Amino acid sequence: MYYSHALIPTLRDDPADAEVISHKLMLRAGFIRKLSAGIYCYLPLALRVLRKIEKIVREEMATTGAQELLLPALQPSELWEETGRWQQYGKELIRLRDRHDHDFCLGPTHEEVITDLVRKEIRSYRQLPITLYQIQTKFRDEMRPRFGIMRGREFIMKDAYSFDASVEGAKINYQKMYDAYHRIFSRVGLTFRAVEADNGLIGGSQSDEFMVLTETGEEEIISCTACLYAANIEKTEVGHRGMGDPCPRCGEPLKIDRGIEVGHVFLLGTKYSKEMKALFLNERGEERFFEMGCYGIGVSRIIAAAIEQNHDEKGIIWPISIAPYIVHIVPVQDKSDDVMMAAKQIYTALMERGIDVLFDDRAERPGVKFNDADLLGAPYQIVIGEKNLEKGLIELKERKTGTFTKIETDHAISHVASYFGAAPKQ
Image (tube, rainbow, N blue to C red; front, side):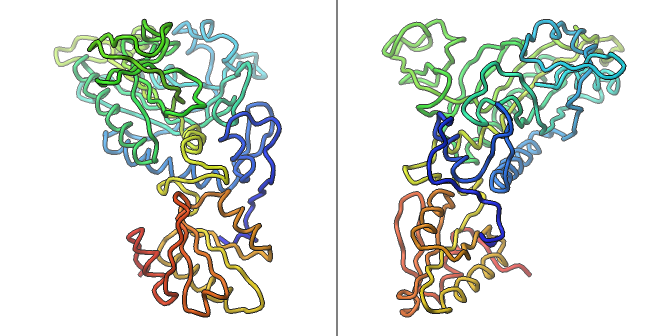
């Protein structure tokens, strides 16, 4: 992409209403713009990140055998009344009425809708197990939306639902999804912990949260310094105490970290299938309730969480797997056309190898270009200047470390492409 053709409305100063670093940097780097409280427009750079996260999620969902579908965001009240959640959910549920005076809500989650679908379509144990998922916009009327897309009234989520004939089968599916979540969050470049969690309004017998560790996290996590025990404050009985208290599993000292929830898995059992009379016939022809699980990932929240963990005073430092652009070409033009010619050649060659490249072709001062490159956070920058070019050299800067490597111009393409295992397209 040529920078001059792109919608990248960068800001020089931090917006006054932005409280956390991810919110500040997403606004400053031109990733999002606020439409209303807790509601944001995702600009092209943010959408590129979002699509890369979705791709990783879909690949890992496929390994579990889950099938993708798409359910309506607008849900009739009758389904929610079957489970009692129409009254229980409270003011966070965005309710509306159509012209025929029928009540609906904008879905914050889809347990009722998916259970209704499955009870109509699946009648035999021979059709089980089955896991269905979607990636879709959800709605939640937060009393105080804050922290940009981290806690908004509209957000993008991956929600999956498993249906099994037995408790044992449900536990197997739960473990598959738990393991898939570890792979997803590792692949998107996050440092995270899986913690025992409270089931909240979703319900069920067991749940685990996946928390990204960061100082600006909304939730406190209790974890052991010796074993794998970790739990959020709602779950653990030691939440009211401080660091150094004994772990309930091994007796070693506990510590407190802060985290951002990016995923949550629930073993639901028959909570929804009983309430909604979702039944199948077992091998003896007897009616049984489906054993269910549900599994959510905050797809849009991952963007903010990644920035919270990967930034410095200059801007964002994207993990390579979800960076909107992998390489940012910065030509420093003076009097010669040779710099721009070399930049265009490198840009074209990298694009032909399938590498996502942003080419800063603007007639801007070098300082402006360098500041924007650091702010946007591509993992690598190629800096092309007249003096180096006269010597047959360009510079490759690694954004994370700030180190520069001089490369011979003739070998620049193969050198940069080798970082990504990229070959020319046939």
